[in-house]
Length: 416
Image (cartoon, rainbow, N blue to C red):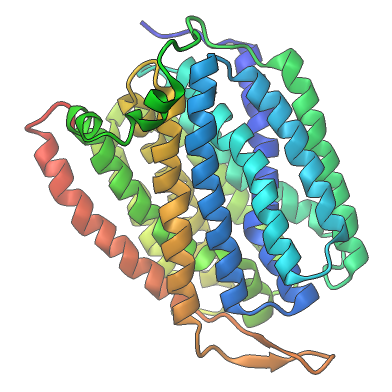
């Protein structure tokens, strides 16, 4: 029987999902641009920042997800978390070095992961069931692309070569995120039946990492492994994407070029949620991975506007529909009443492992990238299209891993 959600749920999901993703887009796509433009950061600096943030995100989600299960509350962690998240973003308006940016990024990630990775994702898992996971994930997975469009559009009015522009951006994003936290006290409704856990915090913290839990839920952990490889492929190129468009391709108007691709990809992702509910994981995962692979295949050899636009559309659509497919199935396989505890292993697969391995691969690929001289006599690297070839090779590894897993799933109900 389908669990009724209601308009208030979808409104809260829209506001918290979108604002959370706007904040993550600014971190994941524009902090790199910030330290590249303001402090002439190297590819290694960018890689270190992404990896440090991934470590903090994973540890925070593991610890705070178990706390939210222990207390049987998501609303407080969501609302207070977003409020503190926004306040930490405000600090970036006053930073003046790569080192301080990396340090503050870790502080901000703690609040953001508490609010979004741990509490928000546990709340979504609590509120859905097998009859509506695809729609929830389709809508939720659309948010990153919509947020990219919002951020791109908002940033068009700023000269990102000026520190004053970055200061204004951080003030706007920080205040908006904090305001969402305040609204959460009125919008968020706890899932029916969510109760305080009597088991000890240590037991809750250890549960998803126990071998016995792995043996009881083999499909979940096999799927998390596949999700980690998917994330590695994305993180090979994502930290360098905006710099590649603007500097390497000379697309000063990259926002106008990419906006149509983002809109189409967002709509397709939202509609794909119904496909996931109807087809299930095994049939819906391959079209998503195929679109992603085709996107890489166009972005690697071509530099002209048409192929880059088509490649960007396919890449973004494959990325977001893939996130929806994996996210829906992972939520289905999480044992009932354990949503908070399993956000830790989910974030290991979604953020920690990809955040460590993907940028390292990208940095290695760009080790001998072309250098350009800046007006102040310093040099900066130019990302090249090899990042898309490397991402495609990682995606091929995912296909080789996933195929036997899915074939075996015919013989075991607990498998994906």
